[in-house]
Length: 512
Image (cartoon, rainbow, N blue to C red; front, side, top):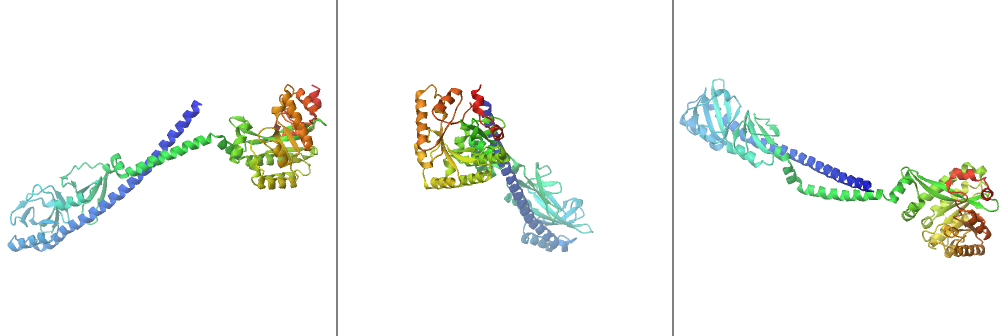
């Protein structure tokens, strides 16, 4: 019991872990997809904005080309300063010759040294500052001709990192030009400390934008992004675990196991012989279902029959018994004595529709050649209401030759009202009365009253639960001629029942 409970709890715990893990994993995967899409969109926006900014520098450089090699006079300075004033994002426009800047839009003819080799045609450079503004980052766009002339256009770093800053999120954005990187705070460095880079390059210019998705991949970002979804996953996991726990409990119920038994054909009909005193041989038999469980062995009928009746599964159980008994009897019709009657147990559920009529009709047609009588035993477990539906089913059964027997008469619902309702051909005395008929005068008196009642209604009497010779003799003396019990035989498989048909039981028993 403790092992079973421990396994039950372990399964529930594992189920909760699996559901939570699956839900959380799926949620995390979806978040990562959203993060990837978000990063991709922000990179595209950053590239588009930066392309516009750099194109302004390109525009200024193109418009300054007429001043290649010109002296730094007032006219040239005016034109350069006009470019700075009219073209967005441009901070300075400078003219250079060889490795010297000789004309700037800010300082005019003041000269500055630079390495011309680092400023090839169409090249970009990120600087943390310049001699003009040493603490202010900028990007330099350069154009050159083959005579040593250079145009340098400075783009204010503010415009660059402002774009990065506006589009910044958990995945910080960086602008990379060559080996230098500008952060969203405007810092220019060669060691930005990017952990999980996602790069997108500009198709127009020589730069790329990098997103560091490290902080967008961690548990903190996951909780921030998906806190409501995570709460829903936890609640859904608890609900599913609750349902799974109920399912596991249901799997341990007789109803579930019985459904499995029906599906796996674990239910087998057995027949307990009914002996007649005239011949001492088998004159009939009661069909009793047996459940052969592969692990638990035989499961007693009192463990599952009531459940079958309550759930409606008794109809399927009845159908199994009818089909299997009919199949095996048909194969041995030549050894079946004329007038043999077979009793099938029925309950109130069987009278709720016409299915039992179909079963009986099929059985009687299949056993017509052997002249087997079909008897339905009305069990005592549930009351069968005397409704129009019950009467209609009873009438149909009568028309096809079905007889009725009141099982366990005198107990439960099997009382005198059933005699009027079903007009039975047979009354079966319950073993509770035959068990101590020899030693208990009250039981003997009850049995005698039943015998007299049966005679008045022209019913045959079958004594159930006959277990010894003394009981048999006393029942005989009371005028009972049909017997059923372990004194003659326990319930046996159908094929064994057929093999027993030629035997003479009373002579053999009485001779012992």
